[in-house]
Image (cartoon, rainbow, N blue to C red):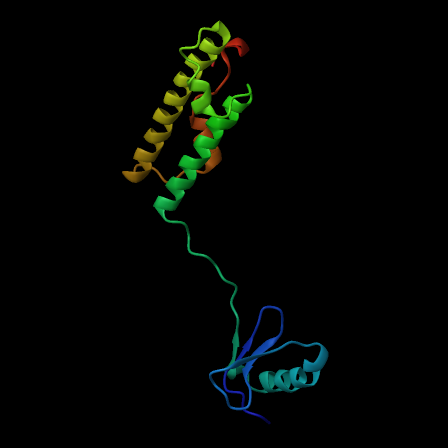
Length: 160
């Protein structure tokens, strides 16, 4: 029987071996095509030498850092505000806010509301972030954060 050294069995069932004694060059052996015979040899070796077989583990990314979670939340809240403004045809919340001094009464009203909505939303969001960063609470999910923000409704849709 050939000694392949340590054999790695991949998640898909194939193997990675050191072929021809070359320990610097891993060799992939799937159970298909031209590799079928070699696969059978490696499989028999692996079955006979389980202590020399390393099972590949799936990659589990590390949990996001608090900074990454914070950046995601900030981006999501900005998106939340922009989508709200786009419901009235504005490019985003900044565009809607720019209409606050407009001479047109409807644009002025919507601009004034957009300025209020933006400020109230960020005030609430930063209160949540401050509580997280001070250790008073864990980082909430995006859905939980959105639920804590002011409900956004245009002035002609009723009270916000």
